Length: 196
Length: 380
Image (cartoon, rainbow over all chains, first blue to last red; front, side, top):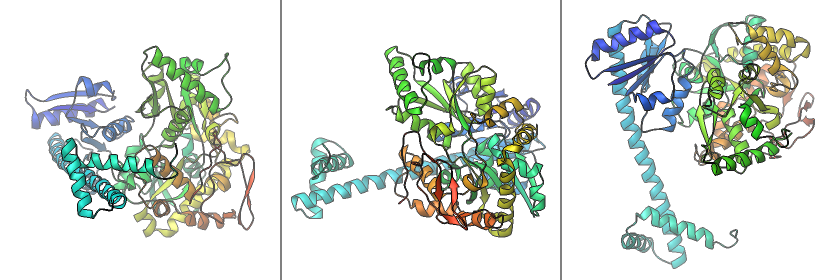
């Protein structure tokens, strides 16, 4: 596991590193500390997890990278200055983000890290399922609309239109959604009054 | 009544800071603890977890969060805007030269957009990399302004320019190191960078849109529902701060307050440059720049659709009204003797000179409300 710790407070960063080593110490655990986050760190170090202090201005930068790149989001664990057990619990429930309260008990840091990591896995799974469900829905809508076009223009029943779409997809070796999208694009062009 | 109010140290947190410095929270019966935050993600998360009750936020943030773009923010309402304008775009000296013709910078953004297109073509021909621009947050007016300008050049902001999100405190370094070619940020960061010789201001908000919406007061809906009087008292305190801060006679005092280390904490010289008449154009007028226009909310939502972050199949009117709450503004402003706009929406753009906004008890004389490209955004 490779962990990148971003914290302007060097002493605290060292404590966090000690906490991770106490739990995951071993030849496979690599920890890098930095006062700032730089984009090149993702390429050069390729961390599995980034831990960032909440007072680092670089948080928004990391956040945007996660938004832009679903493939490589990493959980971010932060610190709050005042201990607030409820807030910590709620933060962990929220998934990707975990809060570590002040008082840096290294063992506690490790356990929060493992909770954050497992939450992260769950969230990733949910996000993948959701993406797939969205894509399936979009495909079905496209196919339904193309069916409608065929039914109108060739005077077919719904079942006949579907079979025709499926046959064309099989003949051309393309997904039904792609065939349906082509039909929609062409039907838009053929609409009276469409711009030249 | 106790509440914790967070802000990002920028000039446009002025109303929040002035209300504390001048004791307006106390006189409205509020005991406010200010929380200075180093980034927007913290503010969003702390609102979500109930660690703070209200905050200075980028206007698009609650819409993005409500529509599932990025982590949750919890339910947020926006009873007022915290002013208009105040951002500037700073570019490297090299890019500034490239955006001039015969040593002259064009007066309008249409002109600079044309030169931007020329520069992008020249770079492509020379095999140079894409121009890189930085913004402070994905869902920010800064991002929308720069994208609109790039698109006005006939360029595709998605493919022909590269975007990075970076903290304003580091943007000047990134320009100096050649990592980015320019950035858009709230003041006083662009002015600080210019004073340090790290680049030159290319344009400021009023050049783009004379009365551009920017930050709003975001309040946790849970807190607002539990403390209906508290919300109105908070808006009153901030409107009273606006009455004071908008008075030109108070400008020097305002600059000194903002420059305090615990507040914005930037050099007074940079804050003053941003506040000057030809500066970043931050408008703090309570009457014309703090009403939470539903048409502003819809403009932001429209930008999110435009750049492909949002499907157009949403009930935008319902969403805008769930977050922006003009009636809370009216409740607070009416008790301070301000005029109350009759409508919740207006045309955004197209007003090149002063105009009359229907209001009671008397119509409001509004300053120009025009976009550089002449565009008009009309609701419904």
